[in-house]
Image 1: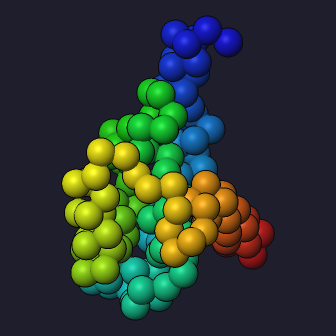
Image 2: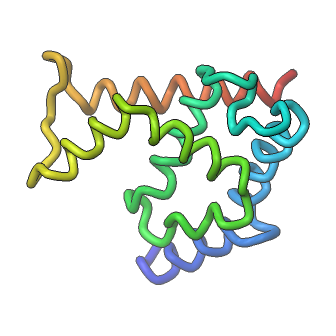
Length: 135
């Protein structure tokens, strides 16, 4: 697929009526149904589900996928609130501030290859989201 066609397909998938929009809407609806009033977190306190949503959607809109950016989450205030709540955690904020100051991200963290860790995070987030929707 040519880059222009790929970008168009991704934009369409992220737009209302598209497959990515529909999947994201399911996560948003789950938060609408189960989040206590006044809390951005699914259980009222930070949970693994919130971390998974932060990681999953952070990866999706990080620029890794051409044509898929933060604007794809514009219609989803709950997901944006969860992402904001997680990134405001002191340890998370410190991590991202330190990374922003680097020319390139380190390829290891704690002696582990970041690529392997990143894939594990993605797999965990996918499994969590599958479990969320199979209930």
